[in-house]
Image (cartoon, rainbow, N blue to C red; front, side, top):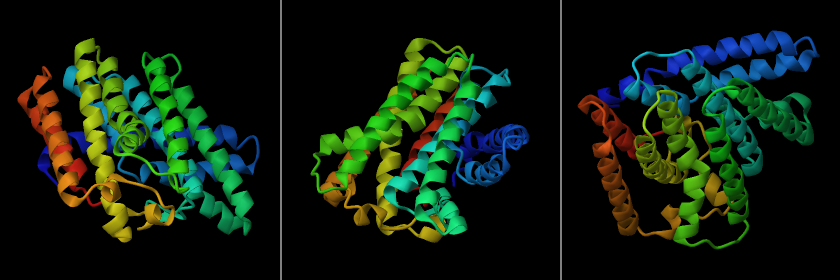
Length: 302
Protein backbone atom coordinates (compact mmCIF):
# COMPACT_ATOMS: atom_id res chain seq x y z
CA UNK A 1 0.00 0.00 0.00
CA UNK A 2 1.31 3.43 -0.97
CA UNK A 3 2.57 5.70 1.78
CA UNK A 4 0.57 8.44 0.07
CA UNK A 5 -2.60 6.79 1.36
CA UNK A 6 -1.64 7.04 5.02
CA UNK A 7 -2.95 10.61 5.51
CA UNK A 8 -6.34 9.34 4.31
CA UNK A 9 -6.46 5.96 6.03
CA UNK A 10 -5.00 7.34 9.27
CA UNK A 11 -8.39 8.88 10.11
CA UNK A 12 -9.90 5.43 10.60
CA UNK A 13 -8.66 5.24 14.20
CA UNK A 14 -10.30 8.51 15.25
CA UNK A 15 -13.57 7.69 13.49
CA UNK A 16 -13.65 4.21 15.02
CA UNK A 17 -12.94 5.64 18.48
CA UNK A 18 -15.85 8.07 18.07
CA UNK A 19 -18.10 5.18 17.02
CA UNK A 20 -17.07 3.00 19.96
CA UNK A 21 -17.72 5.85 22.41
CA UNK A 22 -21.06 6.71 20.84
CA UNK A 23 -22.21 3.08 20.76
CA UNK A 24 -21.04 2.58 24.33
CA UNK A 25 -23.20 5.48 25.48
CA UNK A 26 -26.07 4.16 23.41
CA UNK A 27 -25.68 0.71 24.95
CA UNK A 28 -26.25 1.99 28.48
CA UNK A 29 -29.48 3.66 27.39
CA UNK A 30 -30.83 0.81 25.28
CA UNK A 31 -29.97 -1.73 27.99
CA UNK A 32 -32.60 -0.07 30.17
CA UNK A 33 -35.28 -1.31 27.75
CA UNK A 34 -34.36 -5.00 27.69
CA UNK A 35 -31.40 -7.33 27.15
CA UNK A 36 -31.56 -6.91 23.38
CA UNK A 37 -30.29 -3.37 23.76
CA UNK A 38 -27.03 -4.78 25.10
CA UNK A 39 -27.00 -7.67 22.68
CA UNK A 40 -27.26 -5.65 19.48
CA UNK A 41 -24.69 -3.02 20.48
CA UNK A 42 -22.24 -5.78 21.42
CA UNK A 43 -22.64 -7.14 17.89
CA UNK A 44 -22.52 -3.76 16.17
CA UNK A 45 -19.28 -2.51 17.74
CA UNK A 46 -17.05 -5.13 16.04
CA UNK A 47 -19.16 -4.94 12.89
CA UNK A 48 -18.80 -1.19 12.31
CA UNK A 49 -15.12 -1.02 13.29
CA UNK A 50 -13.80 -4.10 11.46
CA UNK A 51 -14.20 -2.61 7.97
CA UNK A 52 -11.99 -0.15 6.12
CA UNK A 53 -13.97 2.87 7.42
CA UNK A 54 -13.62 4.28 3.91
CA UNK A 55 -16.53 6.71 4.09
CA UNK A 56 -15.72 8.16 7.48
CA UNK A 57 -12.01 8.47 6.75
CA UNK A 58 -12.64 10.10 3.38
CA UNK A 59 -15.06 12.58 4.95
CA UNK A 60 -12.50 13.69 7.54
CA UNK A 61 -9.67 13.73 5.01
CA UNK A 62 -11.58 15.86 2.48
CA UNK A 63 -12.49 18.29 5.25
CA UNK A 64 -8.78 18.62 6.05
CA UNK A 65 -8.00 19.57 2.45
CA UNK A 66 -10.01 22.76 2.84
CA UNK A 67 -9.90 23.48 6.59
CA UNK A 68 -7.10 22.74 9.09
CA UNK A 69 -9.18 23.44 12.19
CA UNK A 70 -10.70 20.01 12.93
CA UNK A 71 -14.10 20.66 14.47
CA UNK A 72 -15.59 17.81 16.56
CA UNK A 73 -18.63 17.85 14.28
CA UNK A 74 -16.62 16.29 11.47
CA UNK A 75 -16.21 13.03 13.41
CA UNK A 76 -19.90 13.05 14.24
CA UNK A 77 -20.76 13.19 10.52
CA UNK A 78 -18.10 10.61 9.62
CA UNK A 79 -19.51 8.21 12.22
CA UNK A 80 -23.03 8.74 10.87
CA UNK A 81 -21.96 7.78 7.35
CA UNK A 82 -20.33 4.62 8.70
CA UNK A 83 -23.54 3.71 10.54
CA UNK A 84 -25.60 4.22 7.40
CA UNK A 85 -23.15 1.98 5.56
CA UNK A 86 -23.35 -0.68 8.26
CA UNK A 87 -27.14 -0.72 8.04
CA UNK A 88 -26.96 -1.16 4.29
CA UNK A 89 -24.46 -4.02 4.62
CA UNK A 90 -26.54 -5.82 7.22
CA UNK A 91 -29.60 -5.68 4.98
CA UNK A 92 -27.56 -6.44 1.85
CA UNK A 93 -26.30 -9.70 3.36
CA UNK A 94 -29.89 -10.77 3.93
CA UNK A 95 -30.87 -10.01 0.34
CA UNK A 96 -27.80 -11.73 -1.10
CA UNK A 97 -28.07 -14.61 1.37
CA UNK A 98 -24.42 -14.13 2.29
CA UNK A 99 -23.39 -15.73 5.57
CA UNK A 100 -19.94 -14.09 5.77
CA UNK A 101 -19.03 -10.43 6.19
CA UNK A 102 -15.62 -9.02 7.10
CA UNK A 103 -14.36 -12.46 8.05
CA UNK A 104 -17.17 -13.04 10.55
CA UNK A 105 -20.69 -14.46 10.30
CA UNK A 106 -23.03 -11.82 8.88
CA UNK A 107 -25.49 -10.38 11.40
CA UNK A 108 -28.44 -12.40 10.15
CA UNK A 109 -26.29 -15.55 10.31
CA UNK A 110 -25.21 -14.70 13.88
CA UNK A 111 -28.83 -14.48 15.02
CA UNK A 112 -29.77 -17.59 13.03
CA UNK A 113 -27.00 -19.54 14.73
CA UNK A 114 -28.06 -18.29 18.16
CA UNK A 115 -31.75 -19.00 17.69
CA UNK A 116 -31.48 -21.99 15.30
CA UNK A 117 -34.20 -20.22 13.32
CA UNK A 118 -33.61 -18.57 9.93
CA UNK A 119 -36.69 -16.36 10.17
CA UNK A 120 -35.56 -14.97 13.52
CA UNK A 121 -32.05 -14.47 12.19
CA UNK A 122 -33.32 -12.42 9.25
CA UNK A 123 -35.82 -10.48 11.35
CA UNK A 124 -33.29 -9.51 14.00
CA UNK A 125 -30.80 -8.41 11.34
CA UNK A 126 -33.48 -6.18 9.79
CA UNK A 127 -33.95 -4.63 13.21
CA UNK A 128 -30.19 -4.17 13.59
CA UNK A 129 -29.92 -2.40 10.24
CA UNK A 130 -32.87 -0.16 11.08
CA UNK A 131 -31.22 0.79 14.36
CA UNK A 132 -28.06 1.82 12.49
CA UNK A 133 -30.12 4.13 10.28
CA UNK A 134 -31.83 5.87 13.18
CA UNK A 135 -28.61 6.28 15.15
CA UNK A 136 -26.99 7.80 12.07
CA UNK A 137 -29.88 10.20 11.67
CA UNK A 138 -29.52 11.21 15.32
CA UNK A 139 -25.85 12.04 14.74
CA UNK A 140 -26.67 14.17 11.69
CA UNK A 141 -29.49 16.12 13.32
CA UNK A 142 -28.70 19.83 13.24
CA UNK A 143 -25.70 19.52 10.92
CA UNK A 144 -25.35 21.30 7.58
CA UNK A 145 -25.04 18.03 5.68
CA UNK A 146 -28.30 16.34 6.67
CA UNK A 147 -30.16 17.44 3.49
CA UNK A 148 -27.20 16.33 1.35
CA UNK A 149 -27.03 12.91 2.99
CA UNK A 150 -30.79 12.35 2.80
CA UNK A 151 -30.82 13.27 -0.89
CA UNK A 152 -27.87 11.04 -1.80
CA UNK A 153 -29.01 7.98 0.14
CA UNK A 154 -32.49 7.73 -1.37
CA UNK A 155 -31.14 6.55 -4.77
CA UNK A 156 -29.18 3.81 -2.99
CA UNK A 157 -32.45 2.09 -2.09
CA UNK A 158 -33.78 2.30 -5.65
CA UNK A 159 -30.48 0.97 -7.00
CA UNK A 160 -30.65 -1.89 -4.50
CA UNK A 161 -34.09 -2.78 -5.85
CA UNK A 162 -32.58 -2.93 -9.34
CA UNK A 163 -29.73 -5.05 -8.01
CA UNK A 164 -32.15 -7.56 -6.52
CA UNK A 165 -33.97 -8.01 -9.82
CA UNK A 166 -30.75 -8.22 -11.82
CA UNK A 167 -30.21 -11.66 -10.34
CA UNK A 168 -33.59 -12.97 -11.51
CA UNK A 169 -32.81 -13.56 -15.15
CA UNK A 170 -33.27 -9.92 -16.11
CA UNK A 171 -30.73 -8.84 -18.70
CA UNK A 172 -29.12 -5.43 -18.30
CA UNK A 173 -27.22 -3.23 -20.70
CA UNK A 174 -23.86 -1.70 -19.92
CA UNK A 175 -25.62 1.62 -19.23
CA UNK A 176 -28.01 -0.03 -16.78
CA UNK A 177 -25.16 -1.74 -14.94
CA UNK A 178 -23.28 1.57 -14.75
CA UNK A 179 -26.37 3.27 -13.34
CA UNK A 180 -26.55 0.55 -10.69
CA UNK A 181 -22.88 1.01 -9.81
CA UNK A 182 -23.22 4.79 -9.77
CA UNK A 183 -26.12 4.94 -7.33
CA UNK A 184 -25.55 1.84 -5.22
CA UNK A 185 -21.85 2.39 -4.62
CA UNK A 186 -20.08 5.29 -6.31
CA UNK A 187 -22.06 8.33 -5.22
CA UNK A 188 -22.84 7.29 -1.67
CA UNK A 189 -19.37 5.93 -0.95
CA UNK A 190 -17.13 8.52 -2.58
CA UNK A 191 -19.15 11.49 -3.89
CA UNK A 192 -21.19 11.84 -0.70
CA UNK A 193 -18.26 11.34 1.67
CA UNK A 194 -16.09 13.93 -0.05
CA UNK A 195 -18.95 16.38 -0.57
CA UNK A 196 -19.94 16.09 3.10
CA UNK A 197 -16.39 16.79 4.27
CA UNK A 198 -15.97 19.72 1.89
CA UNK A 199 -19.37 21.15 2.84
CA UNK A 200 -18.49 21.11 6.54
CA UNK A 201 -15.19 22.82 5.70
CA UNK A 202 -17.01 25.61 3.85
CA UNK A 203 -15.61 24.76 0.40
CA UNK A 204 -17.00 26.57 -2.63
CA UNK A 205 -19.83 24.95 -4.55
CA UNK A 206 -17.73 24.52 -7.70
CA UNK A 207 -15.16 22.52 -5.75
CA UNK A 208 -17.85 20.34 -4.20
CA UNK A 209 -19.15 19.60 -7.71
CA UNK A 210 -15.64 18.56 -8.79
CA UNK A 211 -15.42 16.21 -5.82
CA UNK A 212 -18.81 14.69 -6.65
CA UNK A 213 -17.74 13.98 -10.25
CA UNK A 214 -14.40 12.62 -9.05
CA UNK A 215 -16.22 10.43 -6.55
CA UNK A 216 -18.41 8.90 -9.23
CA UNK A 217 -15.43 7.76 -11.30
CA UNK A 218 -13.56 6.56 -8.20
CA UNK A 219 -16.63 4.61 -7.13
CA UNK A 220 -17.00 2.96 -10.52
CA UNK A 221 -13.38 1.82 -10.33
CA UNK A 222 -14.00 0.55 -6.80
CA UNK A 223 -17.06 -1.44 -7.88
CA UNK A 224 -15.29 -2.92 -10.89
CA UNK A 225 -12.58 -4.14 -8.53
CA UNK A 226 -15.29 -5.57 -6.27
CA UNK A 227 -16.60 -7.57 -9.22
CA UNK A 228 -13.12 -8.89 -9.94
CA UNK A 229 -12.60 -9.89 -6.31
CA UNK A 230 -15.99 -11.59 -6.25
CA UNK A 231 -14.85 -13.80 -9.11
CA UNK A 232 -11.21 -14.44 -8.23
CA UNK A 233 -10.60 -12.94 -4.80
CA UNK A 234 -9.40 -14.80 -1.72
CA UNK A 235 -12.27 -14.98 0.78
CA UNK A 236 -9.75 -15.24 3.65
CA UNK A 237 -8.51 -11.78 2.60
CA UNK A 238 -11.70 -10.11 1.38
CA UNK A 239 -13.80 -11.41 4.28
CA UNK A 240 -16.62 -12.13 1.81
CA UNK A 241 -17.61 -15.31 -0.01
CA UNK A 242 -16.24 -15.75 -3.53
CA UNK A 243 -18.79 -16.37 -6.29
CA UNK A 244 -21.76 -14.62 -4.65
CA UNK A 245 -22.58 -12.72 -7.85
CA UNK A 246 -22.50 -15.91 -9.89
CA UNK A 247 -24.71 -17.77 -7.44
CA UNK A 248 -27.24 -14.96 -7.61
CA UNK A 249 -26.80 -14.73 -11.42
CA UNK A 250 -26.04 -11.02 -11.19
CA UNK A 251 -24.74 -9.24 -14.24
CA UNK A 252 -21.58 -7.20 -13.83
CA UNK A 253 -19.26 -5.30 -16.16
CA UNK A 254 -16.74 -8.10 -15.74
CA UNK A 255 -19.32 -10.40 -17.31
CA UNK A 256 -20.74 -8.03 -19.92
CA UNK A 257 -17.41 -6.75 -21.28
CA UNK A 258 -14.44 -8.65 -22.61
CA UNK A 259 -11.04 -8.02 -21.02
CA UNK A 260 -9.95 -5.41 -23.59
CA UNK A 261 -13.22 -3.48 -23.31
CA UNK A 262 -13.06 -3.55 -19.53
CA UNK A 263 -9.46 -2.39 -19.50
CA UNK A 264 -10.23 0.50 -21.89
CA UNK A 265 -13.10 1.58 -19.66
CA UNK A 266 -10.88 1.50 -16.56
CA UNK A 267 -8.28 3.63 -18.35
CA UNK A 268 -10.93 6.21 -19.29
CA UNK A 269 -12.09 6.39 -15.67
CA UNK A 270 -8.52 6.85 -14.43
CA UNK A 271 -7.99 9.69 -16.90
CA UNK A 272 -11.20 11.39 -15.77
CA UNK A 273 -10.14 11.12 -12.13
CA UNK A 274 -6.75 12.66 -12.88
CA UNK A 275 -8.45 15.50 -14.79
CA UNK A 276 -10.81 16.33 -11.91
CA UNK A 277 -8.06 16.11 -9.28
CA UNK A 278 -5.95 18.52 -11.29
CA UNK A 279 -8.75 21.13 -11.12
CA UNK A 280 -8.98 21.13 -7.33
CA UNK A 281 -7.44 24.18 -5.57
CA UNK A 282 -5.54 22.10 -3.04
CA UNK A 283 -1.86 21.54 -2.22
CA UNK A 284 0.17 19.22 -4.50
CA UNK A 285 0.51 16.69 -1.69
CA UNK A 286 -3.28 16.48 -1.49
CA UNK A 287 -3.49 15.83 -5.21
CA UNK A 288 -0.86 13.09 -4.90
CA UNK A 289 -2.78 11.47 -2.08
CA UNK A 290 -6.07 11.51 -4.01
CA UNK A 291 -4.31 10.07 -7.05
CA UNK A 292 -2.93 7.26 -4.90
CA UNK A 293 -6.44 6.58 -3.58
CA UNK A 294 -7.77 6.31 -7.12
CA UNK A 295 -5.13 3.69 -7.96
CA UNK A 296 -5.86 1.86 -4.71
CA UNK A 297 -9.53 1.55 -5.69
CA UNK A 298 -8.46 -0.45 -8.72
CA UNK A 299 -5.73 -2.61 -7.18
CA UNK A 300 -6.92 -3.41 -3.64
CA UNK A 301 -7.17 -7.05 -2.57
CA UNK A 302 -10.05 -6.66 -0.14
